[in-house]
Length: 180
Image (cartoon, rainbow, N blue to C red):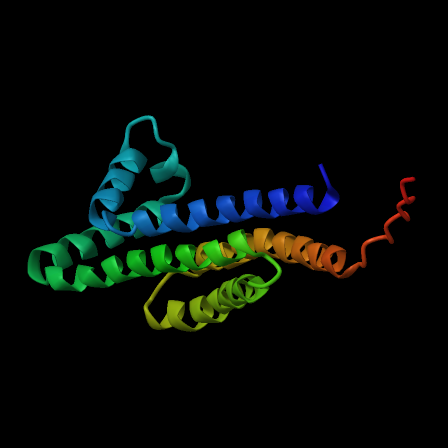
């Protein structure tokens, strides 16, 4: 297997991983109300150490669940926003098919993703306090940008190596002897 082929294969494996994470992240935004209810039930379970050891987390999850219950009951149209959030994740995941097909030509999609990951941090730091989000939850939100950029940095580095391989001229062919 050539170095170019091996590198392309590794790039594609990382991209599939990234795409799957984006899709899963998006799909989990659709059943948000149910998921938060399940999380609260799980954290309140008798075997759970969370209420005793992490009371702030338990209070936050309960507050979020109560807010979502109110919205679902009184203004269900507000949940349409999380449907659009889910859709955006799915559409962004589709964009990464471009680098999957042709990594060098579509490196801009990787760089776009890196910029988006970086943008998570100021968004969380600005909007978190405005929306009364606890700082520790803001840190969790920012971690999506930090962890999301890691595979993209790896992929970008590999694409640059692949680009270098594609620009390297092929060694001259050995002369073919004439047949008598």
